[in-house]
Image (cartoon, rainbow, N blue to C red):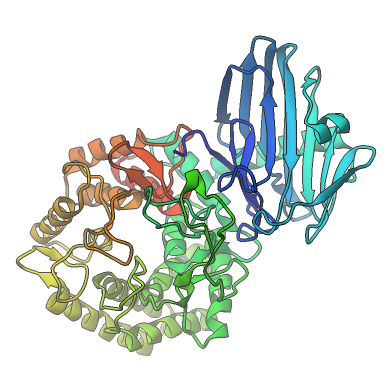
Length: 588
C-alpha cells in the first residue's frame, strides 16, 4: 500500500513523494496542518505534482547516500527527471534548514512534456487559499504565513495546469514565510549541490556494519529526518491516520515525540556514531521535566507542549477510504511509567562516555538522574496504560517494571561515575526491588516467559527486550524459553516469525497486523541466544518487505505482506539497524 513512497526533509519539515507527487507535507512543523495531504484525501488534500504528459514509465530512487529523491519520467516523446529535496547544509556556523521545498526538472532526451499542478491547502483541507501571479512567482493567500511558488516555468502554465515542453532545466521553489529573493536558477542549483554534499558527509561520519550497509544507511537517513532539530524532539513517524490494518479503526496521529520511541531512536543513532541528537534531546527532556516537577507524560508536541487533544476530521476521506482521520493523540493523557527508566538509558551515555566530559555540568547530570530515579522509586508497582497504550484500564505491565529495573541499574553506573554514593545506593535498592517484582509477579513458570501483565498468562512481544537488556544474565535456558514462548504465541504467519504485539483483545478488537519492530526484536533476541542462522533467515525476509526505497511503515499485513500503518516509522528503522549490527560480521 505504501510501495514507492519516498521521504525528503531537512530536520525542520518532511514530505512524502511518490512518482512526482507530493502526497504529504505539513508546515511549518511536522505536527502542523498539512499543506499537501492527498495521502488522506484526493479532493481536499491539495496537490503539488509534476507529471509526464505521455509517460509510460516512472522510476524513483534516492541519490545515493542522501535524502534527495530523483524521479525519471519516460515516454514516447522523451525522458526527463525531477530532483526533490529540502535544503540542509552548514551556513554561518549553524544549519540552514528553511521551510522550503525545491524541485529541479531536467530534460534527458527527446522532447518530453510535463504538467505542474500546485494547489496548497491548510487547516487540514478546510482552507483553500486564493492566489495571484507576479512576474516570476505565484503568491498563495490565506495561510498563517506567506506561501510562494517561485519558478521559471511560465506562470500561465502553472496556474492553468497546462502541458509544456521540458526543453531546458526548470526550477520550482515553494516557501513558507521568508520567500526566495535571490536568483532562482543559481540558488536552486547551489542548494541542491550543498544539500547533496551535506548528506554524503553525514553518511561518511556514520558508523555502519560490514554487512547490510545500504539498508542501514537508508534507515539512518530516515531516523535523522525524524529529528526536529530546533528543540531536539524526535518524531515517532511522519504521518497520521494510516491504519494498522484495513477496517481496524486503529488510525493514530504519530507526528509527536513519544519519549519511549525517542529512547530507541537515540540508542540506534549512538550505535551509528551520532551523538549531537542525544545532547539536543537532553535539553528537550530537561525542559519537560522542569515544567511539571519531574513528572513525565508519554508524549509531547515538538515544541514541548503537553497538549494535543485527539479529534476526528470527518470531512476527510481517509487513506484508501479508511476512517477515522485523527489529529492529536489521547496518549498524551495516559500514565506510562516505563518512560522514566527509558530516559535514564537514553541520556546516560552523556554521563558515562569520556568524550562528553564537560558537555553536561555534574550538578545537572545528578539532578536529572536523581529526578528520574525518584519517579521510578515512587511508581515501582503502580499500574499504568502500558507501552501499547491501552485506553480502558490500567494494570501492572511487565515491560514497565523491566524498564524500572534497567533504568535503575544504569543509574547506579551513572551515580558511581559521578561519585554520588547516596544516589547509587538508592538506585541499587530500586533495581533489587524491581527484580523481585519481576520474578515474583511477572515470570510464569508454566508459560516459561515473562508475561504481559503481572499475574496474568498472556504474552507481549515487547518483553523480548528483556533479552536485549540482559535481564536473564547467563541463564540461557530461561532466555530461550522466553523467546520461544513469545514467538509461538504471537506469530501471525504460521510460526515463521512475523509477530503481532499481543494476542489478547483490546479496546478495538484483536490485532491482525504484524508490528514490524516486534519481528526485528525477535531477530535480535534469536541472535543473542545463539540461534544466528534462524535470526538471519528472518532478517533477510524482513529486508525483502521494504517498500522498494528501503523504507518501512509500522505494520505488515500477513496475508499480502504489504506495508500498513504510519510511515516511515522510526521504530521499524531502529529495529533494522540494531538487528543488522547484531548479525553482521565484524570488520576485523
